[in-house]
Structure formats: structure tokens, C-alpha cells
Length: 230
Length: 59
Image (cartoon, helix red, strand yellow):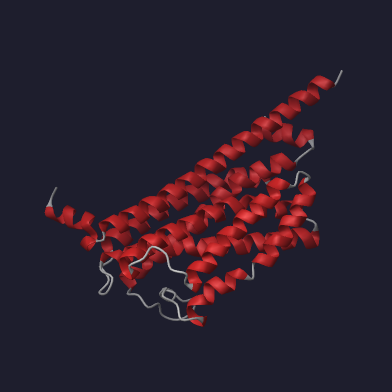
């Protein structure tokens, strides 16, 4: 696993950088302005990907934590632990870029709207997960306790995802759909989809670097560590 | 600056919001990479220290 992470992280990172650059050009230069929001809609090219991955990363954490609990896999717990800070930072980016979009569109940086509030709860879940891990010294006990928190907290993910459909929200509905035509023109939508791919690669790259650190911290087998460090 | 470029940076009057949100996102993307690399460097340093201590304790 360690060798895999070391070999592949630079490739994922490199591809992510190229894809982000092309998607930025497509989103900022090639895509036409929106007829309602003018050029302010371009914030979607950073806001939607970081928001999507704040949720994808939390879901990955919960799944990895569940795998770790059920099959007693240390690597799965390490994946969850490696993902948490990345998810927390992307949640901060979601709230920040959202506020910068909310101000010109709604007239306020923050409103206690279901979508915004549930995303803020996600940030507290990320913090809670990291705080719990940091507070427990024994790694195995930290794995178990934080896994339970991650699994219970996953209930918040569908609340964020569907909050705009379930309640009367100020937040606009989803831009892209899993099935069927998106609500955007092709010239507007391809940079967004490419940016989502870029963030998937980016998450993989950063997570693999953090996973190596997690594996080194847990490993007490000296010969294995000596081998990978030489 | 050419008018076309000026128009691009103005973002139909929303320039402040558009550019600060892109700058914020880019900053966090880069910060994540830096923090991950620092975390790995710390873990490698600690692991090396553990190895050295284990070697010294062996007669």
C-alpha cells in the first residue's frame, strides 16, 4: 500500500493540476456569462467541486471507517484518518466561496438556510472526528471511537445533498444531474465536469501522501520502515 | 491594460467576489498539498528517529 501510494500520488497530482488549469480556462475565459447572474456564476467552477468533494470525502471516511470496524483493516482506518483534514479544508473552501457568491446574489454573506447550516454541521463533524482522534493516544482505540463518529455523522450527507429539494431554500438547486441533461449549456458545463474530475485526482493525490504518513506513524515493524525509508 | 483584459478582470462588476473566491479556493488547494507533505516529512523524521533508537539499544 505504501509503495502504491508513493508511486501513484505524483501522477494523480500532475493530472489534477493539468485538468484544473484547462477547466479554469474553460470556466473563466471560454464559457459565456450567465443571462441572470452575469459573470458571478463563474464562482460555480470552484464552489461546486469543493462542495461536492467536501461530501464525497466525508462519505469515503465513513465507508473506510465501517470497513475498518467490520473487517479490522488498519489501512481502512488510515484512509479515513488521512482524508479528514482534506475534507475539513474543502468544507471551509465551500463555505468561503459560498459566502462570496451569496453576498452579490442574495445580499448577505450568510443566511441560516438548510443547505448552509447542514454544510456548517459537516465542518463541525470533520473537526469532531479530528479532535477525537487527537485526544485518544492509543491508535486502535482512536480508530474505533472516531469510526463510530464518522459513521453516525454520515446521516448529514443526504441532508446536505437534498436540502435544496426537501425545503424551501435560498440556495439554488443542483447544477448537474447524474442522469439526464444538465441545466447548463455545453460550453458552460464541460469545465465544471472537468473540474470535478480534477478534484477527484487531487483528492487521491493528497490523500495518498497523507496515507503514507499515517502508515508510518502506525507501523512498529522496524524492518518494513527501514526498507521504505532507505 | 487593453479594454478586453479590463473587461475580463471586471467580471461584469462582480470581479471582487469572483476573484476572491477563486483565490480562496486555490489557496486552500495549495495549502492542503503543503500540509500533507509536511505531515509526511514529520512522520518520516519520527520513524527514522525510532529506527536509530532501536539500533542503539541493540548491543
